[in-house]
Image (cartoon, rainbow, N blue to C red; front, side):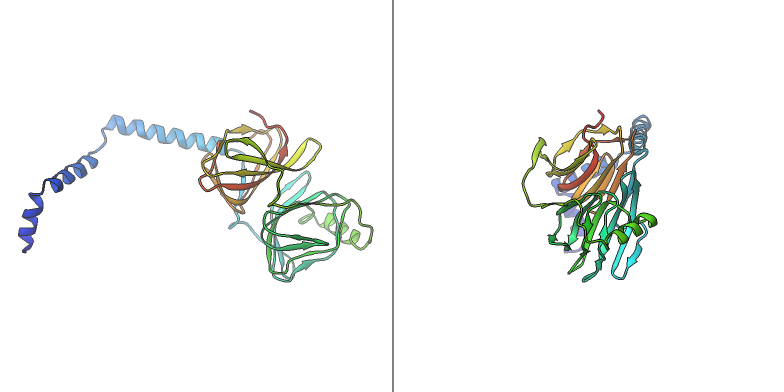
Length: 277
């Protein structure tokens, strides 16, 4: 069959002619008034998105500056709050930190790998609270780990030296608390959204939020600072996509847009028990 014959046969095919007409219709230019209306809607959406993100501090896992702490251990500063610093800390296989006594109440969560602390063995999703004045006999990793710490003295030289000197004294101090990520105690607060209480002090609480694929939470304001770390999965906060390992601070006076997720997520949130409407 020649090329000419093939073209003639194709043009005589009713289905092919119908497909050509549909393609031509899809390429019809938008009328100027309709084009301007579409442009206005897109600009308004972009403005709303920028307004909703105003004041929010987002630190991506793949961005930011890492600092060496000791051989095999490095950390990335995220935020300095009134309750100590928030950081990501990474351990190479076999690396460990020396004994120390906590200046602030420190919360730690494993994102990946393994950590050991005194008699506790921690894996992904596990949480540990070390009260102010408590002593860590040492913390390290056998196979390597990435963890999130909130309330640490890392980045505060004077407090860090006090912690190291305090670790020399054998007095244990207050007892810490370990919460397993695979444990129970979850409470459903909306369709596909469950919360698990971790720690509360002075009207501020730490929680895990488990969000199922397709679930939603309405937007809300913040009367006080709120920290959020994505431990697993991913979420959209308005137009902001947060992936596992991403961190965000919503300062007092800021607002979070609606939370949605297609893949599901596990979040750590530290802030006031009651949020603003």
